[in-house]
Image (cartoon, rainbow, N blue to C red; front, side, top):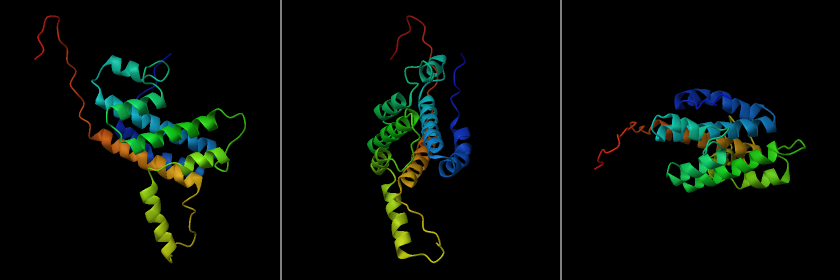
Length: 190
């Protein structure tokens, strides 16, 4: 079985527009699975950029059998390494939970499901942006004929995925990969 490719940050960044369109236009199931998968790929790329270039890095990040091949383990490690803050980590955990609800339900779920609503409402990363957006619409901009429901669970999910993914990608671009070091037996490390 071939290993799943870890996408370069630049490629993921280039895919952002298509991802955001899918979040808004696809079914609830597709939006949740695509959004969580995109965040998973962003985390994998960020972690890969933090490690030395090595087969071991690829092995660890391999989703089929790697020690950090899951969304949850990648989120955990990114938090432990200080690559993401607590609020981001907490929302990643919630998004993982939402993804699991959709992926493991034998019935079709949507954003009107009470458990999904509860989880979406507990997402906090986008709160500052949502408050600014809400105040803009409350003031009533004449150019806004159709005011979106910014508090809807789907909007909260989509905006959170969009903001976190872009933050992960920008932060990953700033990581300087450590050079691969090889020491021979007997070398003294100082």
